[in-house]
Length: 122
Image 1: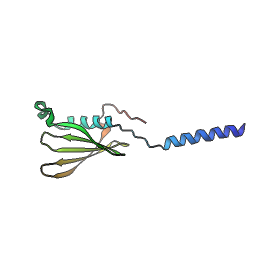
Image 2: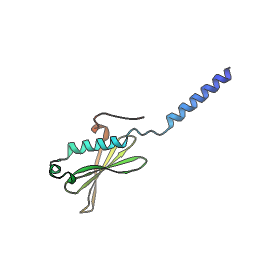
Image 3: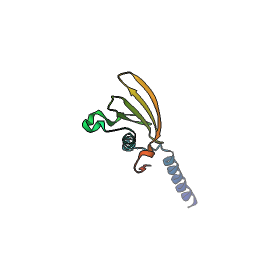
Image 4: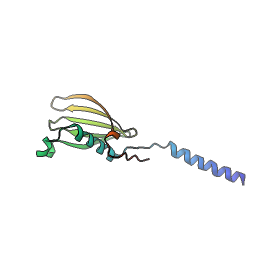
């Protein structure tokens, strides 16, 4: 009986340790979009988009194993790329002006500061 209990405990511990070491994404694509969209609506003047909504928008870009990219297009044609880290929510911003072919790092934000509610998933 003692060997049986020991075996069961060993299996439970093994299963628990495998689960806790599995990589977890706490940020979803929806959260990345929502947070960046909220940031852009707080920081940028959207009055130019009232006449033509195609002049300014937020859209999803490419996705890698570690980053969601969200793109803001300004009425001027400039783009801001937001690279959202899937685990931490740390978001790097890079501004790009296509007509001048100029890229500038524009800082970082914490995505959680711009989410209505922190919808972390484990």
